[in-house]
Length: 362
Image 1 (tube, rainbow, N blue to C red):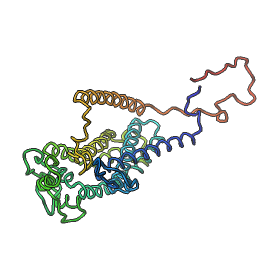
Image 2 (image 1 turned 180 degrees about the vertical axis):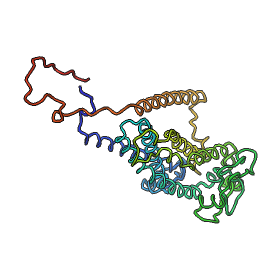
Image 3 (image 1 turned 30 degrees about the vertical axis):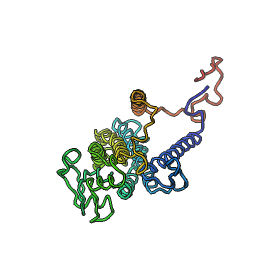
Image 4 (image 1 turned 180 degrees about the horizontal axis):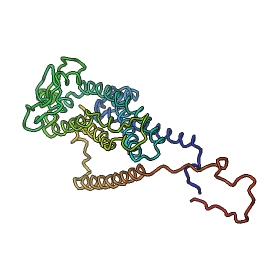
């Protein structure tokens, strides 16, 4: 069976790529709808008999503001990650002076996707911050380690303390009115502090329903990692070769791949902020994480399953990384000439009697 690339027409290959991409985006939409419901439950009633939340409006899941803005944000984050990967591979080959015309084109396409995707991701992320401040104010306060209520509030690019016993962090680089803009879209917007929110949640839901110190540390760390990796967009400049003139090794900076890990760090830190930020709730305002543990599962069962999952994903991650690097470094295969291009026997050539059946590629 011939499994070569040219076994199928190019149009079929392209169609398969788009089908897989569409199916992946559709799957992500359902995953995000479920996750957004856990962040901001909508379209449900609590059964008075068994005290369980029962879904009454499926459409509400897909009109949930947390879903709408969150889904757009992860789609744009995926485009940024893919475009940076494509750009890094292209720049690496251009620096080697290999297949300049092909990789110049791929670098140009990557830049055409990357620049608007980064811009839109910033605006969508800003609006998502406002939505989270509306429905999960504790997450926003913990992200900035803001223990006291402020109006207006500054945003710190770098600060010391605030996540542990120290509730008065030192803002080394503060942006005046920055947090007010991010959390409220208002120049002088009010952001409620962790101390006030903790007291409010304890009164409303009871003890054990507040963001404790470890929660604040992890959320603040996730926010810091995401911001630290995302604020400097200089890797785009390093990765982006001057497309009209690229053709020599000196025209592509030696730091062509240095920015590649940044979107991966940003995506991981963003999920750390999203998931830890709703603790101690597994479903915001409805179910605590401690109440979501099955009584039939022991600590040993959890430890074993978690260890197995970590090992499996670690092996898969290493294998994926090795394969991606191997294929990214590989030179392009030359196109096979067609008979009309001189690849087959010339017309009218005499038979030599030594024609052999070509080997089949299995």
